[in-house]
Amino acid sequence: MGNAIFAPNLQDLQRYFLKLAYDGTNYSGWQIQPEVDTVQERIEKAIRIILPDVSGILGCGRTDAGVHASQFYAHFESELDLPDNLVYKMNRILPLDIAIQDVFSVDSDTHARFSATSRSYSYFIHFEKNPFRNAYSVFHHKQLDVEAMNKACDLLLGTHDFTSFSKGPMQTKTNLCDLTSANWEEIESGVVFRVSANRFLRNMVRAMVGTMLEVGEGKMAPEEVKAIVEEMDRSKAGKSAHPQGLFLDQVKYPQIDG
Amino acid sequence: MGNAIFAPNLQDLQRYFLKLAYDGTNYSGWQIQPEVDTVQERIEKAIRIILPDVSGILGCGRTDAGVHASQFYAHFESELDLPDNLVYKMNRILPLDIAIQDVFSVDSDTHARFSATSRSYSYFIHFEKNPFRNAYSVFHHKQLDVEAMNKACDLLLGTHDFTSFSKGPMQTKTNLCDLTSANWEEIESGVVFRVSANRFLRNMVRAMVGTMLEVGEGKMAPEEVKAIVEEMDRSKAGKSAHPQGLFLDQVKYPQIDG
Image (cartoon, rainbow over the protein chains, first blue to last red):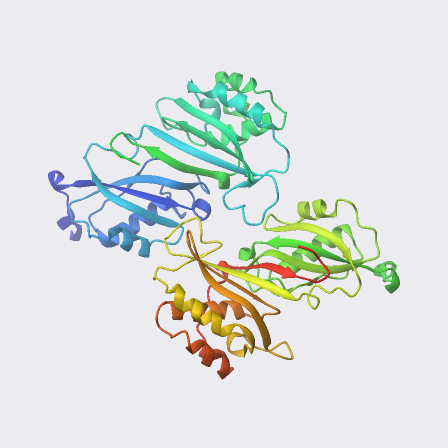
């Protein structure tokens, strides 16, 4: 009854994008689930304090528990005028590990998930035990053959069915992904894996990292990743790497700069 | 009874220094206390697995709960030969947030606490909400007058009784400390306070930071810190700043390089 005053008049609804970042350490991932703390629920609760007619927000993807996002987009609709200081107000309500960076209006057919044409992830590994890196990088005490790992990367480029690197149950019609770039780079503290694709399946980057760590340790030949893809069987790939090294760090939309 | 075989023959005891670092987030400080998790207890348990005759370790200082150390020294004695790979073995036993960096023998009169002639701390503050900085820096959303804070620093230099910036009960004969340097520096993410002294009292750096934040926000004139020192009354100074921004980052011994 009381909510009837907020019943949306569809033609008056304006769609908005939120640009944000979060440390996933203390959350059970992006997506709302019963009885656990999620980033989506935190943001929905914060925005409704300011814009009570917002029915929900929809994210550009679904990061797993413990995975971080240094760039993330979500959309929502409201028929209310946004206050000038919406970003400031939301940040004061939200905990320190979730930061809203921007809010802007978009056309009603620009969709945080389906309009995104490219996503990029980074995965950080350090080789020397360091008490101050463990929240955002994974300690690996064995040497890695980066050249072999990059050979494996090259074999994964292009459009393939990545079922072998996904975690069921399947939530999508197809498991085809177009990997546009993938490589391991040596950095001061260790190595970083950077990968971009039009889309990623659930758990896909961590399964790729876990598999390529086996390649890097010499337990698997680089060429074997090709066979793993062709098997379309998750049990063939390596185990899922720890979440804390993983960042979603770029989501691209044709409609949006930056 | 069983321990009798480890009863030390004093002339055979060799003193060793451990050089280490830790993330204090998950610990109730350095010093062993009943029923809580401390860095000292973790390290003592780890070293005794390898050198069962070690009766205890003694640290260069006592960091509070949540405070980090990027450089910390502790000493212990043993009459057993150290294994070559003691550092490696201890690191495999210890959790990821405590790292042993070196072990070396010292003269029996070199003491981790009393031989240290200088300690340096850093305190980090950032001004823009950032989900990835909160473990090692404190978010401060108000602008700070760094020039005024540095004026306050200059007034604290030299030898003073720092009772006003300490947390009781007193554990030492004197509260005199010789502050050899203290300044606030603007860095990319915000500001860092760097301070060195021959010794620090319990909670002293955080009380200094809390007081200087009041100066930076214009709530207190820089000159007032001089009066606070003279009062020798903890209630006169500002409140203690949050622990997560604080690092013990250098301890100097005349006997040791680096």
